[in-house]
Image 1: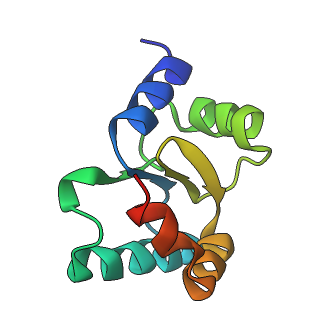
Image 2: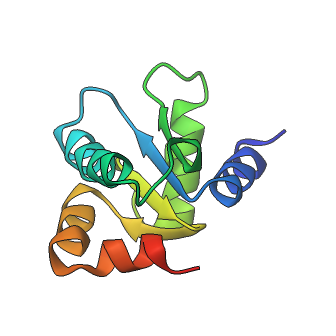
Length: 107
């Protein structure tokens, strides 16, 4: 399966998917926000997946595809219900404004 096909399949299979690097501070911010929603029960663990790409042999290909799909190759790349919603600062902003909670609750 191509990197592009694997990413498309993954982001369509979960409510929230984060492409991340474990040492990235912006990734940590985004993951902390979603952990709050898991603890509150707004987001189920099985609907949430973090894909740490730094040791993936396809890391460069993943970031190249993210550039094509989202306009940037940086991490995190956060998808909710198959749609790209931004990186770490955007996730924090959407959380603060209440927009993220609404995205997670809407069917």
